[in-house]
Image (cartoon, rainbow, N blue to C red; front, side, top):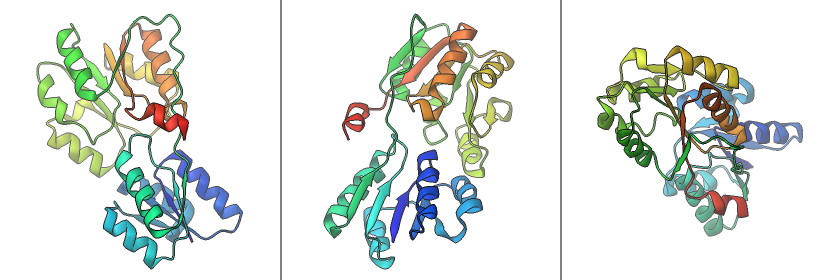
Length: 240
């Protein structure tokens, strides 16, 4: 049995490949939204679980897992480290299928700022005359909202109860929450920027597959600032 750690486009593609080959596999998602999306295609092969090292170890033993394929998000470093460690400990194969982070086509775009963490982006915004930033960095890291109470902060998140709950707990108003599922074209990104009068777009460096290029192009066309939060493990990922 093969365990596909996922919730990403790469995980879906890998599961499709294994299914065509007639291989036995289980695919995981750490969110309710991802679970529902994957279950529509792969049925009972999908499990909704957020692993600890101990629970992953027990899961591998219980389901006779002989190989782990890691298709998690490039920023999900904790589960990647757990999977690698458990695979080595239990003497099973570990394969990394994590998407490579490509350098975005910046060209002559002089309003792009690169930082190493979301809170660095917040500090940059506080030093500038930015009034209506849009964060497309997900719902897991929203603690920064309290530091931007004098700004009209917008977030774009997945349309799941979990994401919306996190937004409400962070103090965001309903009209400032854009709950949508991608992919997002340049045109749609641009329309949202104009609709909400956004003057700064904040995004993680999630690579081409994560819709990064379309976000940057939309910000460029709108003539606004774009803050790119680089993955701290970017170089390591590219070497794998």
